[in-house]
Image (tube, rainbow, N blue to C red; front, side):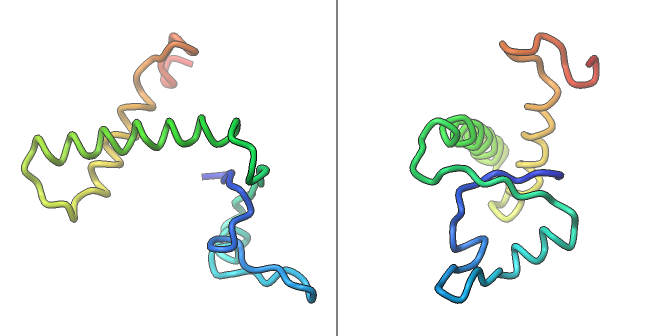
Length: 102
């Protein structure tokens, strides 16, 4: 992961008061790993719609995989890796080729 996009939520990026920004552990982790944080306007729905739709699709795939396979819910992380791999390797409406072909 090279870039992470989100609104400036205090749960991930720390609190801001009159003395300045107080970074939390997540912010320090991003800086240490060289991951660039891009901030979007928290009230604007347009940038959030695409990411929410992607997350919704991904979680639906994970739920389907787990419910149809009778596996433990504790294995959701492996199902999410498999679902992410599938989403990244199939063509879509915007790009007709797979990432491997590109």
